[in-house]
Image (cartoon, rainbow, N blue to C red):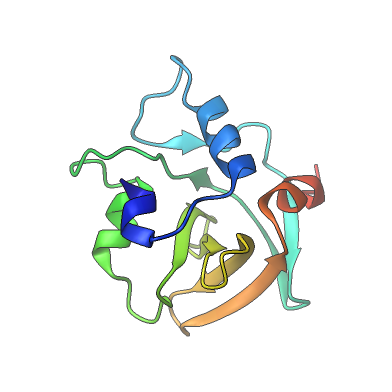
Length: 130
């Protein structure tokens, strides 16, 4: 359903990662970033960490799903920039699907600015400092 809304395929590395988080021990409401408490840098502007990943649930009542963030139409968030996680300050870690690359970016909802993180989700997982 999310890919239909986007008109684009989500990166396979991201889909595999999220499927790995959605085991029976998960509540389905929030994917804790267990094992990913480390930090990462973005576009030379700073450093942050992941608070939680969003589920791929198509349940409209799941406020912590990618779909709920897409439907919310967050002011300033460019079209086809897909929120997949948040940091402790509620900045959004996103997949940039504008050019179908699946690059990882971080969005500051206060300024509306998008900062580059890495060119792919797989690279993103490899740069997280533990």
